[in-house]
Length: 439
Image 1: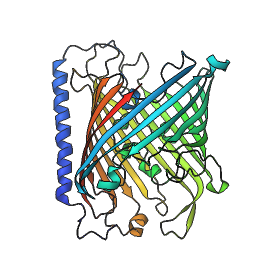
Image 2: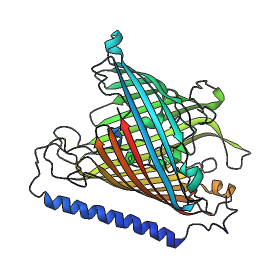
Image 3: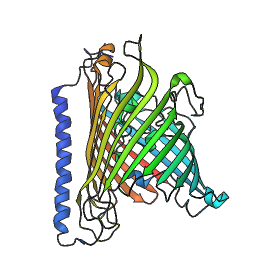
Image 4: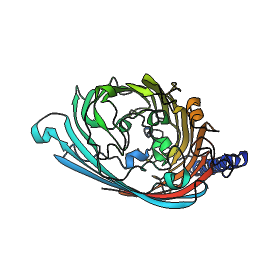
C-alpha cells in the first residue's frame, strides 16, 4: 500500500492542523450557541421536574416494533438513504449513493399462545449502492455505517423470555452482538463506522456484527434499577458478508471455537426522583477460543481477547418546561484495548464527542454533534504491510434534523487524517446527507 508514496505523500502537519482548526472552530460555535440558549432561559428552570436522560439517535429509529405489548403482531420498516462525496484527498474525488432497507416483525407470544413475557422477533436487511470508502477515500474504518456488500440477508431471528419481573431476560436464536453490546447513546449519532462497534473488535474478530449475526444465547441480569450484566455466547466464525451472503449459514464447526462477551452497565440519576444529571457507564470484555493467524501468515495463536469501557454523561441540562424536554449537552467516551498485536490489526481505539440536543430552541429534538475517533494499528500489522503510519484519525461534525416522528435529515462532514492508517494517501474531506424514514 506504500508503493505510491511519491505520488501521494503521507499525511502532513499542515493538513492535520487544518483538521484540528476545523474541530476547534466547530466546538467554539457549539459553545457560543449553548451560552446564548442558556442566557435566554435564565429563571425558567423547573427544579421539580426529573432530569431527562440523554437524547439518543438510536431511540428515534429503533428497529424493534412499537406497540408489541398491546398487539399480537407488530412490524417496523426503516429506510436509510445517503449521498456522500470525497471532496479532497484519499484515492480520488467523487460521490456515491447508497441505502439500506430494514423490515422487522415481532410476535407477542403471551397474547398468541399464553407464554408469559415472551416475544419472537425477526428482521431482514437490504443494503445496496456504492461505497465511498472503496471508490474514493480508501479509509480503514469506513465512512458510512450502512456500507456493506449488497444483497438481501436475514439479520435477526430470536425468541426472548423474561423471568422474575424482568430481572432476568433470556434471548436465543440468530443474534447480532453489536445490537446488544458496544452501544453508546452518544456515539450512535455519528455516521462513521468507527463510532459503532469498537474497531478493536470489528477489525480483529470475525464476530456477529453488522451485516452478520450468528446463533447464540444472550442473558441479561438486572441486579437493580442501576446495575445490570449482559452475557452472550455465539457459535464460532460467522464468515464474511461475501462468504455468507444471506446470513443463513448456521453450521457450527468445532474448529471455529466459540465467542463469549460480557458487559456490565451502571446507570446514574435515571430514576423518577433523581435530581442529578444522568449517565451510563459500561465495562466489557470478550474472548474468542479459535486459533488466529499471526501477521506473518505462517503461524497461529490460540484464542483472542479484548476489553473496552464507555461512558455517556449529560453535562448540562437546559431549563426544562416539561418532563419531555431533553435539551442539553451530553458527552461520550469509549476506549478499546486488544493487546495481542501479533494477531490483531487494531490494538487500541478511542472515540469521544459532544452532542447538543435542541441547540436551537425552535428545534428541540434536533441533535448536533462533533466527534473524534482514533484507531491505532499494531506494529506487526504495519510492518507486514510496509506501512509508514500507524493510526487513522477522524473528526466528524453532524446534525440530525428531526422532521417528524417518521423522518429525519442528517448533513454530515468528516475529516479523515491518514486514510487507511498506513501512509500513502492525502487526508480526506467527506461531506454528505443522509435521510431516514421509519414506519
